[in-house]
Length: 505
Image (cartoon, rainbow, N blue to C red):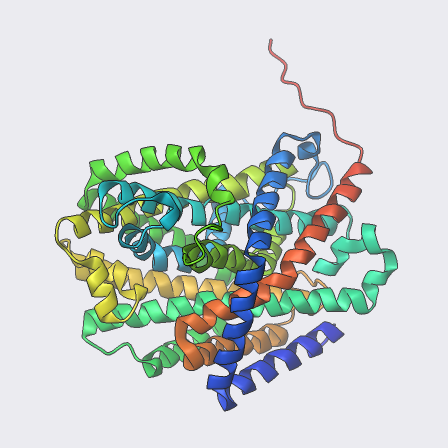
C-alpha cells in the first residue's frame, strides 16, 4: 500500500478494536454505548439543536453574501459534472437508503405517536399534518445545510487553495503548520471514526429493510442471520463496484438510483390518493417554512417525561452530523468549478424539495391507508420494525409485488453506492486526500464498514446503530464549528469577483 498515513493505521486499529469488542462482548458493548448515548442526548441535546440551526443560518448567509460569487476552484474553471450527474451524486450519497427506509415509516409513527409539544390527538387529521411537517423538518433544510458546510469547506481549500483533500487541511488559516502534526492527525481520525459509524447506521437500515422486503415477498423470517447474509452478498457487490472508480461504478449506479426512485415514487403518486398527496405536499411545505424557527429550537424542556425530541430530532441531527464527513467529502469531490452560491443552493434546495415530495407520496399514502382501516402501524409492529412499512403500503396496490421487488432492488443499489462512496471517502481521508485512492485501501475500508454494520446489528440491532451514530457525531460537531471560523478567515482574505451584469441590446 502506498501513500498511507498514520491516520490509516490509527483509525484501522480503533475500528478493529471496536469490531472485536462487539464480537467478544456484545452485551457489554451495547450497555456501554447506550449509557454514553443517553448522557449525550440528555445533557447536550441543546448543543445539537443550536449547532444544526447555526449551520443552516450560515449556509443561507453564504447564498446572499458577496462571497457567493467565489468559485470552488480557479475563477475560470467550469463544473466537472453536469447537473443531472451532480444531483444524482448528491441524492445517492446524502440519504438514499434513509428515504426509502423512513418514507412511509416515519410519518406513520408521528401520526400515531405525535410530538407532545404539538398538542394533537393521535390519529386525527391535525396529527396527519404534524406528521408530514416533522418528516419534512427532519429530512429538509437542516441536514443538507450540515452536508453543505463540510463539503463547501473541503472543496474550497482543495480546489481553490490546492490543499490536501482531508479535513485537517481546512484548519490551516487557524492552526498553520500545526495541522501536519498530532492535532491534524486527531482531527482526521475523528472524521474516519464518524464516517465508519455514520455509514454503518445507514447500511444497517438498508440491510434490515432488504430483509423485510424478502420476508414480505417470500415469507421468510427477517432474522439476524438473514441480515448478515445480505451484508455478505452486497459487500461482494460493492467491493467489485469500488474497484472501478468514481466515473464508472458510482456514476452509473447513482443515475440508476435516480431512475428507480423516480419510478417507485411516480407509481405510488398515481396509484395512490394523488390529489391528497399533492394537496399535502403544498400545504405541508408552507407549514414547514412557517414553523421552521419554532421547531428548530423545540426541546420539551418543561415536559421532563417527554422523550420524543431526543428519540427523533436529536437523533437525526446527530445522524446527519455523523454522515457529514462522508457525504461532505464526496460532495466536495464532485463539485469542482461551481460558485459558492450555486453550490449551496444546489446542495440544500434541490434534495430538500425532492425529499419533501417523497414523504408526501409515501407518508401521505401510508397515513391515508391507516385512516381507511389498513393498519400499517400494526403491520410494522407485528412484523418487527419500521422496515416493513414500505412493503405494507406497496402491497395495497396493483402490481404491489413487482413494485416491492423494485424497492428491494433500489435499496440494494443504494446500499452498494453508499458503501462504495464511503470506501472512496475513507480512502481519501487516510491517504492524505488522494483524489483517486488505491484500490487496496478502499478494499480494507469496505471490509471494515461491513464488519462494523454486522457487529452493530448482531449486538443490538438498529438501536445499537443509532447509538453509535450519536456518539460519533459529538466530537465532529465541534470540528464543524471551527471549520466555519477557518473558512470565514480565508474568505475575508479573498478578492471577491465582480458581479456579472447582463447586457441587453
